[in-house]
Length: 275
Image (cartoon, rainbow, N blue to C red; front, top):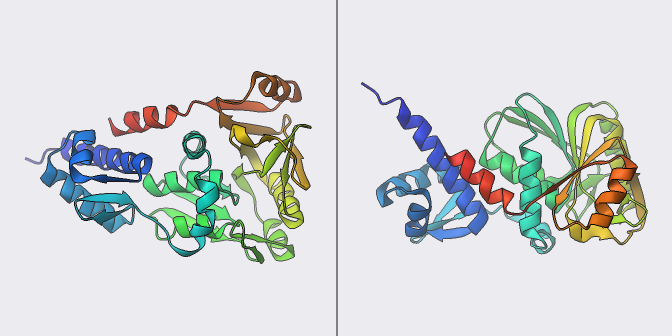
């Protein structure tokens, strides 16, 4: 008689390995086996499965989380800034997703963490984006439909902008928008460095039932060149718990629903998902 617990135990173990490598970037087989409480032969089989899914790359004596070459490389320097906070924010945003949603993922390194989570734990959703790195991250993921806007390429963010992107956006409607920001100014508004990006970001908000701004605490205070939107009652904000009390009070007065997540939440929820 077939053991019906087998598939669920394996799925939990695969999820645990994905989360472990996501956190550590790379690890030896012995380290992975100790982390998930499995034998070396079992871990070797699991790594073969995860490599076939495109989630990891096996190395000599271990494995690493899959790297996407090319356009994602442009994100590498900024992505590593406050990486723990960005991962925790991305995980909190991912937890808000539900099957069959239509979701827009904006360009930016914090929003890219949401795409990484979807890649590790896919669910049937329709993803729209103006970010080449996000689209590449989610290529060939089962049950995830990906639509990329067309338009002018802004190389710094590997993002698509301009009148063509705006025209396409006007014909779409989303259940959820995850929006990034270059900075949050002392006036309580989000800012970006590109005029076309500011205009497209502003339009995104009008095309979504719910908008969550994803920004780590280090970006609060300075202003970039182009204002996008005030953080007010229309928006949710997901940030990390190093944001000052003064800022939290200011956001509360503005009506912005704020969630400040602890960086340790990434590890806590990852462990829960593996159980």
